[in-house]
Length: 91
Image 1: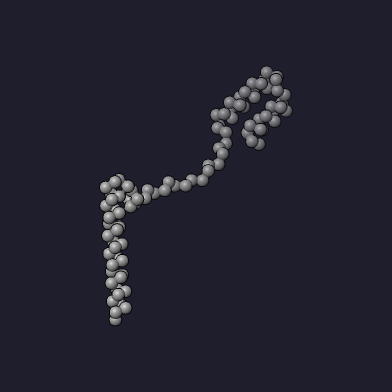
Image 2: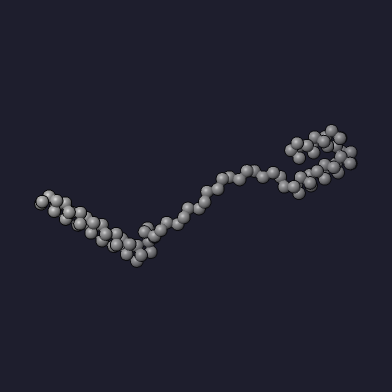
């Protein structure tokens, strides 16, 4: 029975020492403003990289209007105008 009693006493002493050292550590952390024992802040949510956005509608309209003006002035031929328009619209 001596071995069992010694094992039980060792467990009690170890448990008490652990409890006391934890309490002392928390008390010191509170005293010195450390946040080691505070609940950690939640991690910011991870978001996937957004897909590259298509050019803004206003930007496309402005480019098409500029092309139309160049076509009306005779700077661009009908084929050049159609090719540039298709490139802007992604067709």
